[in-house]
Image 1 (cartoon, chains in turn blue, green):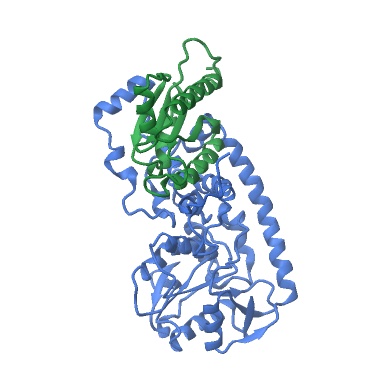
Image 2 (spheres, rainbow over the protein chains, first blue to last red; image 1 turned 180 degrees about the vertical axis):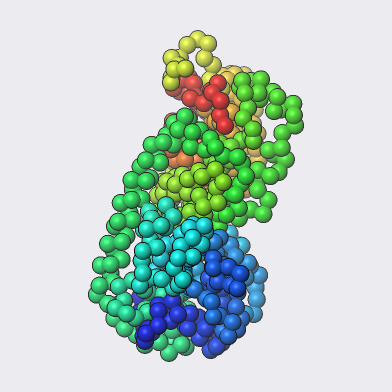
Length: 364
Length: 147
């Protein structure tokens, strides 16, 4: 993969990356940019759309935050054919989710430029705001001040998929000897790098080492987490205990970037029981905990999206009962994805496994 | 409450069979008209195609206390809707992989191709499945409060 460079020249990686994004607009490579930005009312960055580079003062593309999954917001900008090009600055998990949404016909890659970065990880929203009160430039801290990484979400701390291989352009910040690298992962990306007149470089030798060390550390943590979670889930008692505090608010479903149904079956009459049915169930089983079908909800959601789970962790972030939903989903997803030999977001042309009517994979 | 009950005379497996209209259900009909009896523990539900089986039907059966779920469809290549049964194969394979992670024996979920003319085969597969489930003992979910 070709790497290009932009010299930081005293700026931070963040401001240099922002300059590049402004160039996309100024040089008419893109008509709009979706990127993380603060606004006059909030230090918590939000996905923000810009059509004029003059307004991009508070853009923080490398901020360790994702207040919400940007993948769904990004898909809204390219969900119909349009005669404009939109640059979408997404974290690696959000890129993968976006590609999965494209496979589900929720959006298209045709008019999108996928821009991503070596992921800094993210903090929970309230942790970000608390830290931002102490650190004035938290949005620009990556990679010079990595102390925020002690407070990353549990999911990020065990994520080893932080390099966005499928993105058109990737901001390379780790192990770059004071430069901002830009990798062009696709032909589209190479074309843009040429239009922006970026000069090619050899990848600095320290980068691969730095990345693989971090990946190894995260992978070890992930392995332990998945083993612990898997052993908890392997019994009726275990699963019930895991989700016992769930109140069926469906926040996790709403926050999930790949849970895309406009009308979720759990909100339809299928699960709207008449009173007689509820009382009958109470009689047969001895008792019925309300709200009903909590286990059914999580198991169904797992069966529907485990193949596409990108491990973004938003489900845990939004759970009002502090259930580690992401640990449940990531653990199961790894097994499901391994069963199908599938990696979500790897390639938009790779078919969704349940719909790939191949005779190859026969049941034993 | 003991973890597993020994198989006693009083344990009758509860099996839900999701069968496709064009092949397996027709085979069941043929078994019936041929007076080939099969176990009464089977509760059959007719669908148009195994390809329309959402994984949640299987999950609901198990969570409601089914001891086994049998899925019957057309042989590959013979699906009335061309490739519905191939999708079912992948989906049900995935479901077996899933339920195993929650402590269910994946052999409690079986996918079997049974053609429309295969009345005797239908009787055979049903009988064999019921015997297998009976030997496995009741589902760990049975008579247990499920949230």
